[in-house]
Amino acid sequence: MKKLFFILIAAICFFSCSSKKTTDATAQSNAGDSTNTDTATASFFPVTSFIKGQMLQFDSLLITPMRILTIQGKADSQWLKREQLKPLLQAFTTPEINETNLIKFFKESKFNDQTINAVTLSYEPITNLPDSINLATWNVYVNPKTGNVTKVYIVKNIVDNNRHITQQLTWQTGKFAEITEILNTPNGKSSLLNQQKIIWDFDN
Image (cartoon, one colour):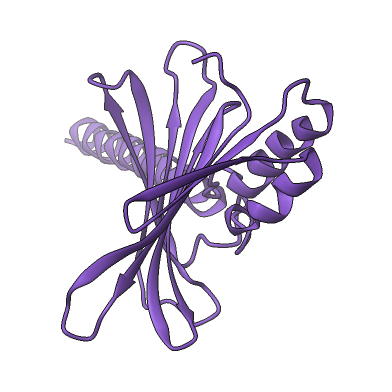
């Protein structure tokens, strides 16, 4: 009888220890997952640094860039000096978009669009934006084979002389930039104000 009693006690101790080890291991695993989640930092593509890097190439252009301005369906073109490019394209650099400064206002989503052969990084607001941020949304297009950025598209809502304007900015890497301005009226209608395309690569 005593022998049976000691066997029973030993079995209880064994299962109790095994259960505790399993629980401890699970807790450690969960703690590790929590640590990874807490320390993981979101990071956006640094659009402003990329655009400014592209602008540095203007200083070594071997050809004369062209500006095509379209107003009310009528297009007019003019050749530009290299030093005129950056001031005309300042809209692409403000407000700044770096790796972390807009994380609490926007979220990033990724989509592999095979129709245009690009991985699209889309950024949409997740909360009401302060007046200091006139960004509405933006996209970054990446070639899935090379990993190179092929295009950046930015939409901004600006107020100019009490006019509410939607500004659409397209930067085609190494080729051209396009700025389209659309006037929004209180009755919900919109009209094209102007469009300007600045080209510094005429190969394609």
